Image (tube, rainbow, N blue to C red):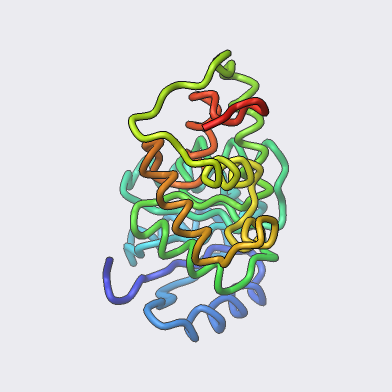
Length: 223
C-alpha cells in the first residue's frame, strides 16, 4: 500500500467533482491527481496520469461509465475502478461489475466509507454498497442452486459466527450487525475476519456467495 493513494475523479457534474476533491483531499493518504467529465476523457486522463484508483460515474455524455470501465480495464488490466453513482439499477450493477469494477457505491455514501472503499480496493479487495451486494447475491443465488446440506469446513463456524454471516449476507454493514446483535463494532469486525478465513473468502461479497454455495445460510443450519 503506497503512502498516498492517487485518485482520478470521473463525473460529468463539475460541482460533484469539486466537492469530492475538497472532501477527499482532507483525508490523509489520499490525493486527487485529475478529473474527467466523461468516459472518453477518463481513458485519456488515465493513460497520462496512471492513478491508483478511479472513481467512475455511470451516466455521462460521450461515453458512459460502464463502457469506460470496460475499455479502461481492457487496455490497462491492473486498473482499479470504483463506480460511484446515484443509480443502483440492476443493469448498471451487473454490467459495471462484469466490466471489471472492484467497487460499486452510491453517492449518499459517507466520506469515511468512501475512503475505506478506496483503501480496500487499493489493497486488492472488493467493496460493494450493501443494497447493491444484496442484488448480486440474489442474482447469483438464482443462478447457482444451494446444496441440500451444508458442507463441512476444516474449522466449523461458531453459533455467533453463523449469526454474523447471515446478516453479512443480507448486506448489513459491521455497524448494523453490531446494533442487531448488541455487540461492539470492533467485535463484529473480528468475527467477519474469522469468517472470511474459515470459509476461504477474500471479501464480504465473496463470503456471502461462498456461504450460499456451501449451504451455510440454510435456516435450519446448525454449527
